[in-house]
Structures are given as structure tokens and as C-alpha cells.
Length: 188
Image (tube, rainbow, N blue to C red):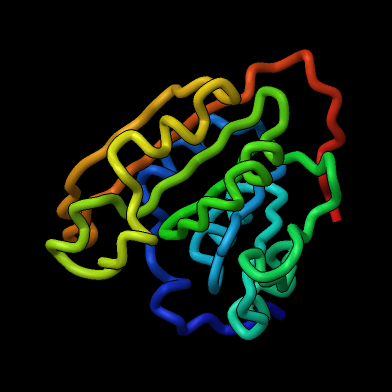
């Protein structure tokens, strides 16, 4: 029996950006949700038949995902990247999280033909709420720069959104062109 979920973050609807770009994934696709917290997107993706791996440093938050997805407790800012070299996924999802030193690992985790679905706060957000620390806000065009030369951008937005709460965000969906790279899809 799955645990009863009462955390409002877990019960929240998925990001419309994630829902839009995950819709095109093939049935049974492998998805990595980085800094997944209590699993809002992990649950939504798993409910659609995707094989999901969630990474977060909060073991208590991840404990509610038992039976839903594979989870890895890891301090991805203070420790090593928890996945083996060469591990790739059909999609890598990141929302409301920014730690720039991880970009090489995140991009490398996108399988040939796979996609990066990323959405987080941008400069301007300090005028409407948290986060307001510049270390956690993307500069104009920063997501584009992060994927340039590695992935092909299929969608990008940078600006103010009023829903679900007022925020300045950047969003990107970018794909790794198929072919040319030998990789092993990751599964625990």
C-alpha cells in the first residue's frame, strides 16, 4: 500500500512546462527528476507510465516516493554526482532549482534523442518574491548559453508568469540529436 500523501507541494499540479514537453516522450521512457523534493513531478510522470528516478538530498521527502519511483538520496551540491558515468535518460527534468556547476552532469545525462526539460527562476524575480538571491536567478539567456553546442533548443521562454504565482522564469526544452554517441540508458 502506498503512503498517504498530504504535503501540499506533492499534491500540487505539475508545471505546465513539464507537462507539455513530457507529453511527447515515448511510452516507458526513463526520466530523471533532479532536486525532486517530495515528488510532485515524480508522481505525475510515474502515473503516466514513465520509469522515473528522483534525486534529492532530503531523505524524508523521498521516503514518500517508495513504490512510485527509484530514489537516490544525495547532496548533489556538496558531494559527487550520484549516477554512474555514462548513465543517460530519455528526459532530465529540473524545476525550481539552480546549481550551475551541475550543468555538465545534467546535459551528459540526456540520452541521444532525449530531452532536457528545465524551468527555474530568473533575474527579475527579486522584484516579486523569493528567491531573490542572484545566485539562484538565471541571467537573461543563461539557459540558452548552458545548452549551446550540446543540445538543440526546441522551446525557450524567458519572462514574467502570473500563474501559479507571480514569478520571473526561464524555461527550456532541448534535445540531444540522436546518433553519434554510445550510451547506456540508466535503470536501477
